[in-house]
Length: 332
Image 1: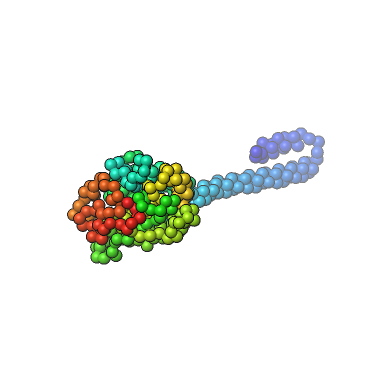
Image 2: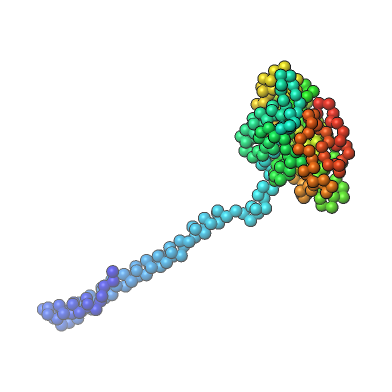
């Protein structure tokens, strides 16, 4: 609080005028008092000025932490460019057959379409435990067309496709991985990939994914091959993503429990294989495949007869090699 020197000086002068001090002594005393008061006022003024300057400095500096916080919370300039680019985060899981197409049939009423749906449930949990998102082509006893299943995969970004089968002729207690083999190299596409050749740009990546999964299956199931094999699997041909078919054991097993016991190992091998493949996942810079102009996707039969998964169900414009029957033991 600042002192009012006018009031203090008047009061002091009044008291001195009535005192018994000699005139000279009074003037000296007054001068000393005035100097003392001036010094006191000057000190208060300096202190007050310092406080004001400090307050202004604090006020001016106050926004700085907010600016720092805002800067820290902002993504780097290239964040959007790198977001989900060439990052594998989704698996499109396809339990084969379903609905009017039961797939391969075994003794005791075993139906491939039912068994693979139960396998898919365990595979899904294993994939999700690895932090992967799972899109399933069917959850019940329905039969999406080949093109419908492929379209689900082709609509995803950062995805691979895994279709699950039970073999009709395979060696029991083994598991085999297939990649597509019936596609010629793309040429003169004019920037568009024909629908029936959608897998062509991804064949090398599909083989890498297939080998990663197959090597883990071979460790778990004696008699399984060490590397993936190739076959004319219809479902893979129209899929614009790394795609594999996993064929499990055989419907000819004596007891259903033999297949059930394989489910946890198959699920773990697929999940770990996909994770091992992630560093190799680099998608070609190509547009989405377009449906062949001659036939729309709905022209593909919604259901197929048993044993047709590896045969041609494509529009007439499909590659002729795809119409051939798949090698024995390949996904049916």
